[in-house]
Amino acid sequence: MCVVEFNVTRLSSSEPRGLKVHVGLLGPLTVTDHRIPIDVPGEKLRAIIATLALTSGTTVSSFSLLDELWGEQPPRSAANSLQGHIARLRRTLVQHSGKEELRNVIRTSGSGYMLMLPPENVDALRFIVDVELASRMKARDPEKAIVLLTDALGSWRGPALLDTGHGIICRTAAARLEETRLMARELLIEARLALGGHYEVVSELEQLLSRHPLRERLCEQLMVALYRCGRQAEAIGTFHRVRQRLSAELGLEPGPGLQKTMAEILRHGPSLLHQVG
Image: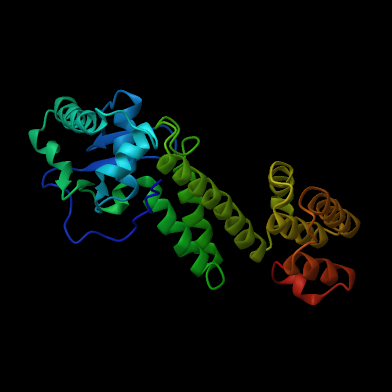
């Protein structure tokens, strides 16, 4: 089994001249050239271009693509079939765009293939970079972090890699992207709390915690928001509900961050007026 890592390093060479290709993975697969849609038919073709897009500018081995398309026991003809799928994908890009040079977006490289796009032309890679940037800036400039995270979260159109098959690479990438999406929402809420938006985030936090009842960071944020709204008893009740679920489902006690938040609430700690946790 081979899992390809995301590549978010800027390429030294850009996409083929005269093209402006973008690949969307944050929802159903989209491929566009100068914002003109290019239809990629068939799950295997979509899986190939999605896998290449996840590591845009880096070679994905034929072995990894075989594993992605057919699993650990591919048919004997799989290698030839992969070459045929790559050729068909190139033809599809050319036919739908009317540009022969679009064939060069998928380059044969050593024992594999490479998608010749800068990472910022792949929405999933751009999303990861934006979330990392917002995470670094939220403490010193929460307003800018809010703008960046709001725009990043707005780029989602549905579940990640929705129609790219069930291969290990796309499944793993989808799970990681969904986790990053949830982390981005937590970062956004944290920035809004830093600017005094506790009344506005309570309802959203309650909904998120109902969907992710073991997510301690969400619990901390909801407790702080409730406390700042003058609802200390509800904040304490939230802690005990999450603690009970952690014990019943995982056999664990709340982590240090959650326990610290609870202690601060009980003693009316002044830090609760300025920061989360």
